[in-house]
Length: 321
Ligand SMILES: NC(=O)c1ccc[n+]([C@@H]2O[C@H](COP(=O)([O-])OP(=O)(O)OC[C@H]3O[C@@H](n4cnc5c(N)ncnc54)[C@H](O)[C@@H]3O)[C@@H](O)[C@H]2O)c1
Image (cartoon, rainbow, N blue to C red; front, side, top):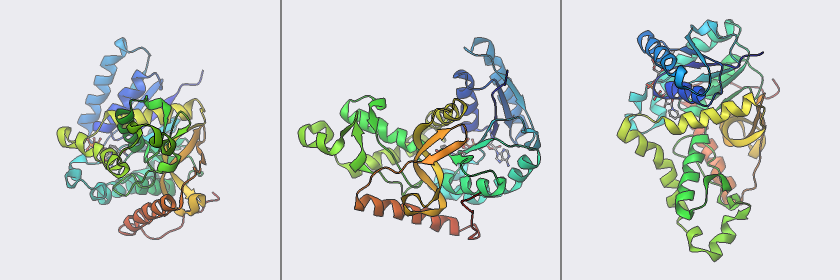
């Protein structure tokens, strides 16, 4: 039988919670953890092994070096230094995180890794692109959690406002996993009924949309202020991405994907609805947007490009690879 092997590079707050989520949900038969902090790595391996007897599923947990990840089906990238985020701007981590991936992604690939990489590390869209470039993996096989977590925050806020269950709401945060993200309100719907129509009849659906967007974006910082990190939201997002790949679900959810003409954009990764299956992002799904929303999405993409210019050479990532 083929074992499902998931590697995680960086087992800080986020990586450790991702490992626990994957173990608890029975999504991995084997977890392979890597961290440059050897003491922390040893502790996380031990703590997870100590849980196995009482978990619903069996899982093996071990540590490894960057070049020992060839048997991983999926690699989760969650390195970082969360203390750098006290500025409340994900970009302040960029100099550190880009330097890290520049160092170890070539080592991972030299070790023979040939699976799918899901990036969490911030700034998510830019680091995902850098990993895609360094890895040389085919298009779609590297993607980021992107606005997947922000979408979950938005749906949570919409559920609280309307009383409708999360899973009956179709809504997306799109663009940058950062300050400039946007909501295509005109396609937002509740069980297929458009928000715009519902708002004409029912006051629960009449709310300040800009405020709602700000609440959703601010959710991350509410979590960060009290605990110095975010954990449950992101590890749940990651676990859904992993399940979609492992079970070839063809599930549509927001993720950071390369854009090659979709939404009239190219040369960057951004948060968009993606069809996710065994080959990673298999299709970018283009949802209908009105003219104002299209313009807002383009300005999100411009913000990502502007941030990329700070650190990376303006190199091309060919779409036909
Ligand atoms: N995309 C999202 O939605 C989202 C959500 C939450 C956090 N994040 C990001 O995830 C990253 C991790 O956050 P965290 O709270 O776990 O940070 P953290 O500081 O708690 O942990 C980072 C871990 O990475 C390790 N590390 C650093 N450089 C490494 C390297 N070169 N090789 C191996 N390990 C290395 C550190 O030793 C540490 O254990 C950050 O970039 C954070 O901003 C993203």
